[in-house]
Amino acid sequence: MDADEASPMPDKNQADKPLERLLSDVRMRPDRNLLNCLDVTDPWPTIWAKASKHSGATDALLCCAQSTEEWQNFSDWSKNAPQLLWLRGGVGHGKTLLLTKYVQTLLQPYPASRNNRAQNCAFFSFDSRFPEWGTPADALRMIIWMLLVQQPCLEHHLRNKRDALQRERITDPDDFVALATVFHDIVEDRRFNTAYIVVDAVDRCFAGTGRYALPDFMLLVTESIQRTPNLRWVLSYNDSNSRSMEPWITSHDSQHFRLDPESPDWRTVITKYAESKLTEVAKTKSYDDELRETVINTLCGMKPVGFVWVDAVCRALLREEARYTAPCLNTLSCLTSLDLLYGHMWRDVDSGYDCVKVMITMAVVDTALDVDELGFLSDLFGDVRPETIVGKCGAFLHIQENRASFVHPSARDYIRGKVLRRARANSLKNGLALGCLEFLTKRLPATSYSRSLSLYGYTDPHPDTDEPRPDRLHYSSIHWMRHLPWSPGHIGD
Image (cartoon, rainbow, N blue to C red):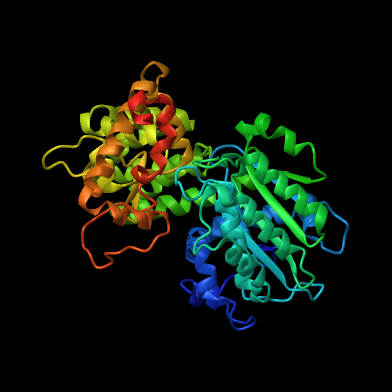
């Protein structure tokens, strides 16, 4: 199968076009005010950016997957095939790249499917690095939003639930049951078209501050398959979590597809990806032709172990001056696993006192942090700017939209294993809980306490004030409470 057949080239003029407008030519316009109750950010720009970058490699990766018998059987709606496809692979083997590319092709402006039935698509990626991207309720909010953008005629199911709850927002982790009711009503509606629902990293689903976790989400998947034939689920998970996923992997009639790093097709894809990324590094660092070829040939010749490994190597090269590239290359070429590479990078971070404090904070909170909040909780004093420290920790951390997070879940797992020794965990969590209370107190002075009610859906009586105060994405607003079991008794009081 040719790559063009598996993955038609999207129109680049649509790259920044919101999903809602992208599909408006063939669908009635969704009710924006109604959809706002789900508090969802349009995912199309992110999907496009991830899938379009290094498109040569991602096209080839999708082509490899779609050429397999498992994927073809799953995608053939004319057959009575299993409605669930499990995608698995090791850390950095390309599961997220593959699924975002797959979703991008499905979300093109509605070419009719071969059986002349328009197919919807919804996508969510569990990511416990971000408090709003990790719970079953978060997944359902995104899935429902995407389905209703594509079929606004079904909006009344969401409207009825919102009116019954008498709330402007349905965003609490414990809203999972209410959202599940809406989801089932939508997919069982006789007007509902066939749909692919793609969920990445389902093994990273967590309860957060709510009661519902992975078993509840998998129960929803199972029930939806039993109730309607119009759904196809694609769920991915990491090989290392196979044992914990086993109850669901083995209990359903499903197709299974594994990204095999030893297969020739996968080797071709990862080499293309490495060449593309290293070419970007060479351009950024102004390597001469000889150095560029040396870097590309050396690293591609040693058989890269995964996409995340390639990304980490590129970050290491970007941090070195061009004149030191040769010795750096010699060192990197010996680091043939992700753990070895992270260990080498950790030595640079471990030499800086402020860097270690920031890493400890990020490891304990286990989620993204506002940059100012990170500086406060890490006790960065004087003229030390948290942005500068995060930059020095660039092998593991980065900043997006003024929020610091780990560059990849594997980086987070490595650091947590490095700094959260069991003997220190309790004291670190105690200190963090107290620090969060202090941060919250400084952001919400007693004289303005009523303004904090806006965090819980009430109207802000002082909407024009410029005084900074936390929102629901601030860790100190609510998410810190997961540390209460370890905190001193007076905190619980």
